[in-house]
Length: 156
Image 1 (cartoon, helix red, strand yellow):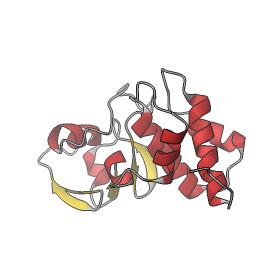
Image 2 (cartoon, one colour):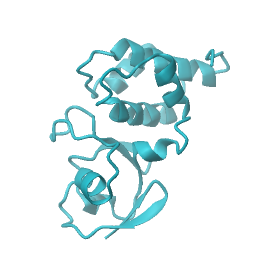
Image 3 (cartoon, rainbow, N blue to C red):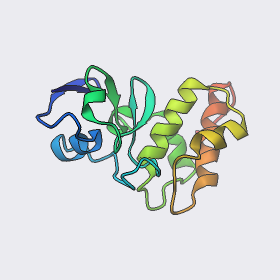
């Protein structure tokens, strides 16, 4: 089966029911997408399918066939996506395990809603768990990016 991931076509020889997470991590060695709970509850495995956030642990590769898949590795080749820069500025990562899923959720959210309210940010990010409790820093980083895109100063 062919999968288009981060703009490149990859061949995988797996059962169509195989979760996309295992195709990414085990077959293609793209380990930025993390395995957390395996039940779609924690958000650590969040990727984009055609620009929409999806839990790779629950998504069979058959669903991804013909779709554009973006992983954390494809968010920005240089690591300079505005959210990634804001994550560094606000010292978001602690253990870092949930951060690729947090970033992918935030990126899809901001793309769909570039001027969110504080409550909308809270709601959008509520499906991603952080065991270290960096929620205030995650929210501050998202707000920083939103304000910057609204014409404010992100203090880069």
